[in-house]
Length: 143
Image (tube, rainbow, N blue to C red; front, side, top):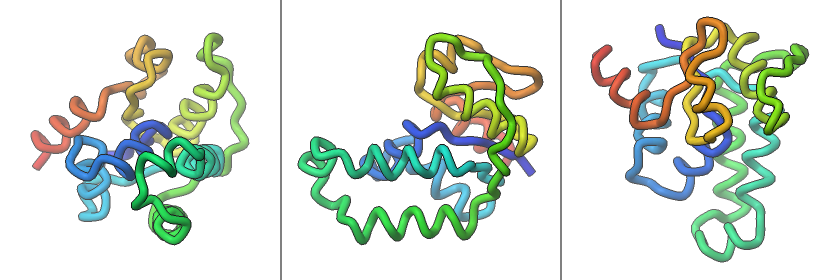
């Protein structure tokens, strides 16, 4: 089964845009079409971003209850990594190193992201770095 890490921006997009590729990807994960790898750093950043006041004002459906339910679901069903690996692969955005470390620890084949710092790498070791649309196409071809 495919193993993938979704960058924070992909999780955020899935939460606020119900019909985009990120939301389709989350639904595919819920259907068991791939294994979602996550770490505490990603989960923490998702919560922080979803609770930002400008996000809360723009997307009124993101209540405290909805955010809590999302985080609980991810915590229960995603595959967590220990978050102990430290690497320096993205000098322009050190936070992105945690995404790569999560993928390495979780033996992921893909990192799904819209982040230009990560996308510019195209791959790290044997991990392909793809956009949500590219990952959706991979999932579709697999089925």
